Length: 455
Image (cartoon, rainbow, N blue to C red; front, side, top):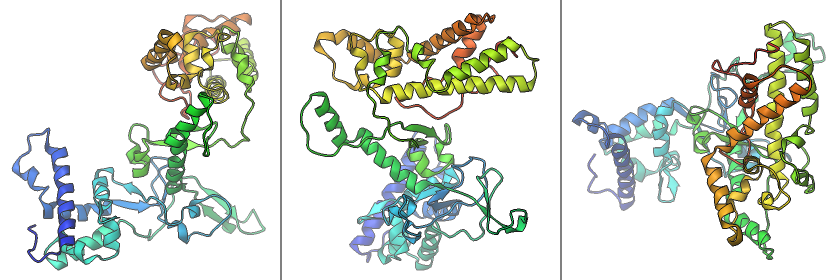
C-alpha cells in the first residue's frame, strides 16, 4: 500500500518497519530461487499482511505446552498469564509476574507471523500495540479502516482462550480422587499436567547466564589466578540436558526451537561438594576400574552374568530382560562421566598423577579445553584441544568400555568375542557435543547386531 500523505510520523515509522520486515522475508525466501512475478507479488505489503492475518489462526500463544509431553499428543495447550495464578511460596509460573515470554504452538510454517508480531517498534512489540488498539499502527496497516481493523482482530487472536479443553491418550494424565470412596469411578477428576514452557524458558536463561555469563566467567578466571573478586558466583551442579523435538524442535514450540530443543533438568538430590572422590581417578590406567564400583553397576554386572550363565531360551522376555540390564549399565556410564566432571575442577587431567589414556581424559575433563594454554606444556595442551574437536574420543572410550565388559564376562568363563565387544561399545552413552549428558536411552536399532550368546 502507498503511505497516506496525512500519516503521522509515528504511523510512518510503523509502516516503514513492517515494510522492512516483509522485504527481508522476501530476500531470504527468494534469493536462491528463480522467482517469478507471481511469487514476488506474494510479498507485496498488503498481500503479505492479508495472508499473515489468515495464517495467524494456525498458531497460538501459550504458556503451557502439551507437545512437550509427547510430540504426537493432540489436545489443548494453555495461555495463563502468570500474575493471574495463585501466589504460592513454591517456585512456579506465578513467580514470573509480568516478566515472561509467550510460547507459540501450532503450524511451524506459520511461525513467521509470530516473528512479525514480536517486531519491536517504538519500544514495544507490534502485538502489544495491537492489543492497545493503537491508532497509528492501524493507520499503517491499511488505508482502509475496515480492512485494518479486520487484520488487527485476526492478529490479536494469537492470544486466545481455549474454548473447549481436550486431553489425549499420549498426554500425562492423573485421575485424582475427590471422594472417600475410591471404588466409585465417578468420584475422580482427570488432571493433565502440562509443561510450563514460559517458566522453563526463564530457568533456561538464568542457567545459561550462570554457565556462560560474563560475571561468572570473570569469577572463574579469578579463581584460577587465585585473585580476589567482588560479586556473587552462581553454579548449577549435576545438570542434565533433555532434548525435545529431535531434529525439529520447532514442532514442539517456538521457545523450544529458540533453545535448540535444550531443556535443563535440575538434580533432585542434595548437592555433592566432596572434592576428594575424583582423586580416585589418579594413579590408575583406566577410569573404568572405578566405574565398576559406581552406583549400582556391580549389581547390574552380576545380573548380566547370571542371566548369560543360565543361557535361557531365546524368547522376547529374555531379550527384554537383557536389554534392560544393558541399558542400566549404559546409563550408569553416562552418570559416572557427569559426576566425575562435576566434582573436579577443569584441568585436573594435567596433573602428573593422572595416568588415564587420552580418550578418557577428554571424556572426564572436557572443561580443560577452555583453560589458558600453558607455555611450558604448549604442545600438549594444543594437542588436547585439537583431539577434543576431532571427536574421535567418544568412540575410543566406547571401544574401551566394550573391551572392559568383555573381560569381566570372560572371567566368568562366558564365551564372548569381537561381536559382543562391538555390541557393548554401541550401547555406551558417551556424549561428544557437550560436557553435560543428554537424556536419552541406550536402545537398539534395526541395524544393531546383537550378541548371539544369551539371546
